[in-house]
Image (cartoon, rainbow, N blue to C red; front, top):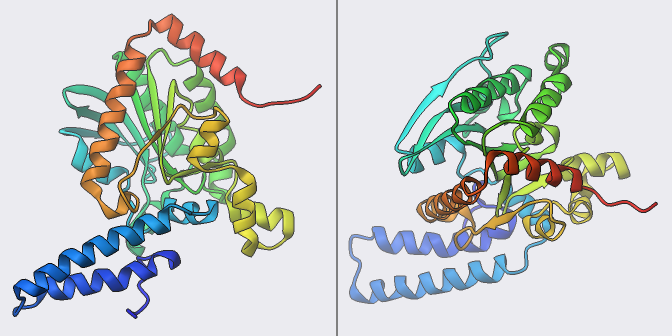
Length: 320
């Protein structure tokens, strides 16, 4: 067996051995025709193993995929899907939050105001991006960008991927809760179309602050939740190791949320999830965004706002 690789989740480790064999044969200077045939057979075996593993994932395993260290982030989509991107910095009040990216983007000649959370890859970037956890100035920057979109009559596109808003004292002292509440209120009545996509981890109010939309989609292996499974387990059972039980109970996966009518569509991911085939993921996301844009553009502004309000009012179930 191959050595443990941190870029492979526990349940992905069996795939590592096959992939290492393929790599070894491909890089061999003495590869023969027989070796090429073996590579083809190994690729077939790899696909079968991936299909088997991903056909029976638990909600906790899907949560791990949503946080996968190799999963594409907002900047990856910007670089590979959009022909142009002009970033907007700062909230005009305090500073520029690096955990949220905002800017004007062009996708197939269609202009968007793009807003997205950004996590980091290595240690230095994770600290620079504050692990994708925005502070109040990040949400105020996002709101400033949305108001620009409203002024110039262009749709807002948001990419959600955060563990949650930053819970530190400095964020609270600068009115974190008010910043999130302002975004919820302003987005509910923003006079331009809003499309939101959960690309990874949609955590709590930190996600919702850029998630009020006309069309809310989730990538197949993303999650969207009021609290992380670990946080839920810590509160209910005083034991974060019971996160797998909490994940099942929270209904945080795309299929469950679609069944509850809390999201509008699931965007398919390639075999083995987004981190195994970036180009296929970019293509799938792009076509779905353009499809959702056509849907919102087919509706008048007044009908769009009325439908958005009705959608928000319909959330939740109760018994009298």
